[in-house]
Image 1 (cartoon, rainbow, N blue to C red):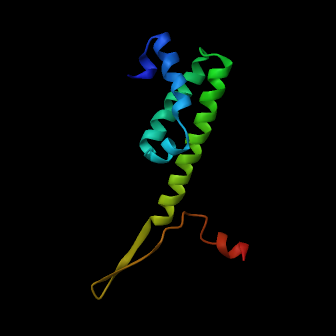
Image 2: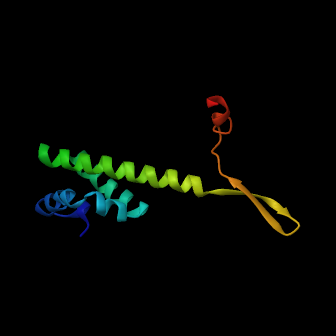
Image 3: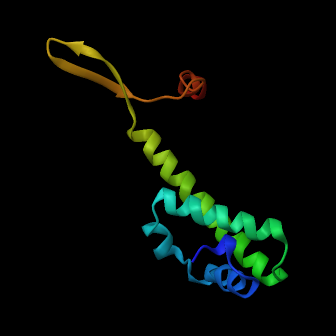
Length: 109
């Protein structure tokens, strides 16, 4: 069911699905699934049609989803490598560092 286009009663049911998002299910969500659910939550909260309790549950779920996505992004950033070139048939790589962070490690030392 597309929660964003559902009738009022169905939207309430979709919003209440926030109770189902516990830590175990959250770890199993892909980045794309988490973002899609976060977008749904934002729509619900912006509409202002739910009770305060339902809004708070959705807000809590949204915070958990945002942290989950941030964690996945941080993990992906650590895995990204920049291709430097090929020397004698061997590819050299180094860890990816976003612009502006090259000297961040040196400043902290």
